[in-house]
Length: 278
Image 1 (cartoon, one colour):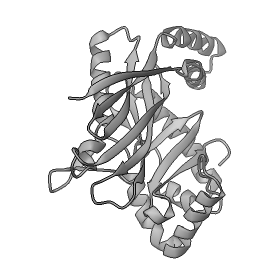
Image 2 (cartoon, rainbow, N blue to C red):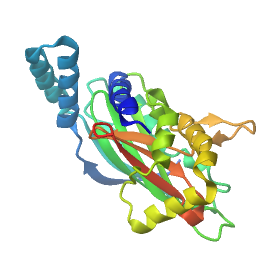
Image 3 (cartoon, rainbow, N blue to C red):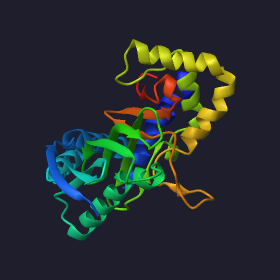
Image 4 (cartoon, rainbow, N blue to C red):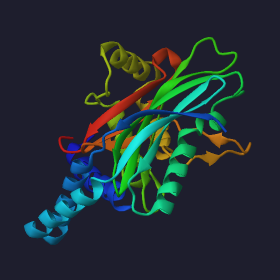
């Protein structure tokens, strides 16, 4: 993969797309600190780039920081039978009606594995924890990790998904909105790939999967998975929600995206792509 070809395109396009667009028992969890300062800095940089004015960027950054400092998010838990799923609850928006719609949307997406993945919600086991990566006036970014074991399965499988929601439009944002899926597939198959929070055994398992299938055979398959990544979920011909085999989000200027693998290779891997150095 040519670094110059995708580095600048990914950085500009992804940040523009992700920044601009803006029945169970509940139990409270800890409050999650937001990245208001980081988001304010990104907004200031964007204003400076478009206007060329340092004063404008400073003023915009100060206003954004003041406004976004009021936004916060905590995680709560949906619990029923053998199912436990964390989901975010945002507070601090000045528009209470929009805040309610946003929280409803976030919860629906968080609980979607129940319909999309489980065969019998009364018998299957599903445990998912939520982490709010960032929450501000522009967007909310959440990641979900857990385990699922459907009745009849011999062992549980790993589960990872993420959700980036534009606060004003309630649009679900994802990798396919701004990044070339073929380029990211090339990256995933290159020697330069980097897995997030993975040890040597996980990296070796992923390399073994590539070797067993061959890079040429995997190129199209991975690109198709990335193209169909993230929310919103779509329904198949059977009327059931189809679960994507890839999810993505942005954190500190880096793209993270997942791929589902056969269980013997780890079930799921999450890649980290640095938009600055790649």
